[in-house]
Image (cartoon, rainbow, N blue to C red; front, side, top):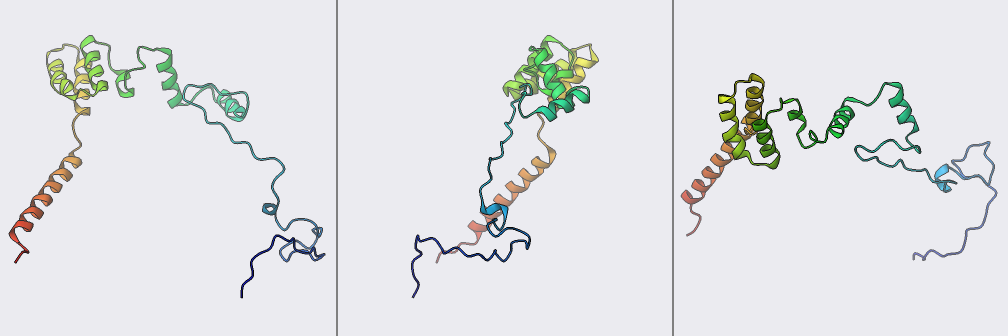
Length: 176
C-alpha cells in the first residue's frame, strides 16, 4: 500500500550526495540547478526599427557599429528612407525608379493594391514615354504583378484533379 508524501523534512545526513565531487564540502549542493542563482540574468531588450542603440545593454553592438564605419546595408536603406520622408512610402524595389509623375501614380496604385490600374497603366506608360528608364521601370512594375508560373501550373493541376474526382464520383454511383 502506498503512503502519501508528508510535509516533514527528511533527516539531515553527513554523507555527500553520490554525484557530488569528492573535494566538495558536505553542505554544498550537488549541482548549480539545485539552488536558485543569486541574481537573475537580465534579458536584452529588443529594439524597434529606427530606434537608436541605448546606453544600457547595447554597448558591444554600439561599439561594433562605430568600429566598422556605420550601419549595415539593411540599416542604411532604412536610414535613407527616414532621411527622405517622401521616399518612405515607396517599396524598396521602387526607390531606384526615376521620378516621373505618372510612374509615381502607378507605384502608389501598386502600394494600394490596385493591380488592375497597374495592369492597364504600366504598358500604356511604357509604350508612349520617351525616357527609356521610365519605360523600363513601368515594365518592371507590370512584371511584379504577374502571377508566378509555378503557381499557375499548380492551380491548373488542382482544377484538373477536382474535375476528375467529380466525374469519378458521379460516374460510379454507390447507391442501390
